[in-house]
Length: 630
Image (tube, rainbow, N blue to C red):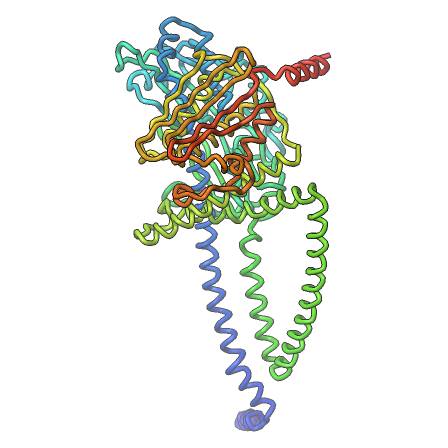
């Protein structure tokens, strides 16, 4: 044993005096050991940060989406309340004028593409009017009890409810089949159909004109989630790089992905179990495997009027979109530590050589890219079509990161990340306003590019103008509530029908009213006059304000793109300079025209002239329909 100890002691003494061993020990002590410690603690820190940021991102995105959906349902309630408060509505209920009530229901359904079911009920839960002939109503269902609650309290209701499709539509009807979800592989009963639906229910009372405290009818509007188009595009744009899912009874019934991704196969699949714990607010967050690929998910419970669970709304995205950066950094750290240990001396020379090589490569890439850009610029000058396509592509690419910025600002302003002080809130609010202004510019630029390319076509339909204009005016009353601007409307005759594209006409009137409100001083009036000119078979809409006005020599400039007249109001309320050019092009698509009459200090009158009928286009649509039927 003594000899063995002496042998080991001799080897240690020999190694200690060996220069190579000393260098290795020095490198290990001053290079490898610190790198190992840094790698260990940074990995732990990064994993913790990764987990927190992952959960925060999922929750903030889902919270914004839920907020947008609640605002959409609030808009439907606001429009339904306006119609319920019209004098003609209770009169039609008392006179049992089914035609008038069905027209009002049809108006709401046409203006809101997420209203799939609309009925008018009396206090006994019997149908007075309905938007389609295949609509059913079960007085003993959840809708019946909610109708009795509205008639008792006189207050509107906005809730989410789960109910059988057979309580809403005739079995075998087109609407019944549309919202039936086919069960897919992985679910017991494959080949069968799920006939339960998660519904956004809006119920608004109609009050008796003689007795304001008495409810004489209830308007019921329902949006059904069993559809690939349940999530509109402006909501899906909030879920950047991910997708949204709605789940009822353990089955995915609706989904929406970001552009360029198709996840329709999720609909009809059984919901996977999340490998995580439940949070205090009832949400689940964790990992789910879809087609063998790990996805990070957060599920938020949806409850009905009674507080019972009826479904889940979820947001998810692939795990590698989070973990890739963290994993790569850790691998690079380990590689650098190994290189420092093995090639400590040559490493500096290798790095210098690599830097020189990268610099030469970068210079080559810069020269090539400069040459490519010069060619692209030359082509853009020669081809107008290429220019329009370029504008469309670049504005689309700008929208995605801009939406993320706006979402982050809205998230901070909403207090989801903690309470902001006054200074912080002001800075975030300024950033949000600037982002919204830039997003409006990008959207207007996209609209203008499509209009200039000639690819935008009007989808004409016939509708009544009175309720259409009144709905837009009512929506715009809160545009500048602090200014106390009064908007007055008049119709000659009181109502008439027009053939036009409702979406385009809405955009025209909205832009004109927005300009009038923007440049009107406080406590002023705006007059909206709608006239049917029998001799010329035209509709004349004039919007007259009492604002600062425009000089005569500047009237033509206003209709040019990015033109704005310098005055104190434009500095106070900046715009994009694209609103009126878009209005002009939309009017021309209707074979109409837009003009302005204005004097400085006396206000401005915008005059829109549109044909009441679109005879040629209507005739072509009828012929096409007949050929399709044949």
